Image 1 (cartoon, rainbow, N blue to C red):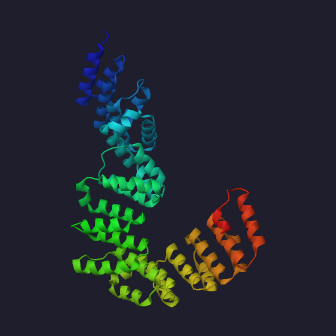
Image 2 (cartoon, helix red, strand yellow):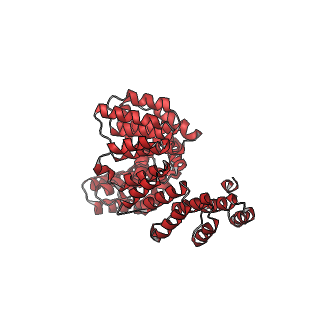
Image 3 (cartoon, rainbow, N blue to C red):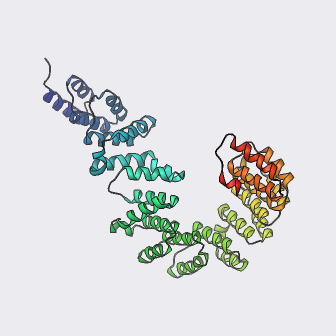
Length: 417
């Protein structure tokens, strides 16, 4: 005897709730004209019984369009698994989601955003500097934000810092509820964003209005001043931190060393170094920054001392000292160190730094040899080589490089500058 639809559905749901998946599956299969209601119940049961993969098997057989409740559960299943299959299904469901669910259904939207966050889509786009993609997702899904989402979107806007990002970022900040304005992580992201927009006044206003400033907010402010060529203000903030009992961390000192690099004043550099604790001074990240600072201040000997003090030199260490030689007209020294650098540590920046050093020292023959040995020549590497040739009026050779590049690529404007 065929079980009536309403009874089959009720029994199936009851079986799922009691963990009897086999009975639930049999009853579900015997139900004709299955509704979203019974699909949703089955999906919930499978998820709660750690059988999320079976949700997707069932979805493949589903002959009706999922409604908002079903979609919310499916997004949850995708978030829970977050494997290749789940990511493919989740993105497809989101792409096909009806427009009316995108604007006024917070249950679906929150579930979708949670899924995307679990996939790492938004963070991954931001981390990989694909800021437009991150903002595309933000504009695709309108929902009530949490602290993580605010932080990610503010960072995306900061990374892009164009008209679109400024409009989105400022609107989002203006409408942000008061409780998030006391969250130092969110506030620091907003401060960083405004600094990237060049809106120093509003960034300072946010900072001053914060009653519970910590190292995160201070670092965001100092970094913002550095980004906007207001390096002298960084040192005033350092004194304020000392007065308030806020202890600088590695990131703080790194920013301050960067500020010294911009100013280029030896006495200011020495003032900062005297205040960096020895345990922090010995960190490779700080030593790399000190090499850069001394190089930009014209004190190559001190840059070399810092370089020699590092035992576990990385790509940044080598690139920074090669660049320091180049900035100070020491092309031969840059080439010598580049040749000593282990091949596995060399990257695009390594090639650019040494070619730039050759260019500024007029070592075009050496530049040619290095250029010829580079396996993968990027736009930037070719551009530096063109600059090296042009400085010595070898325009025909430079033009030949441009012509060869444009045989397989679109013109790159910077090559002509």
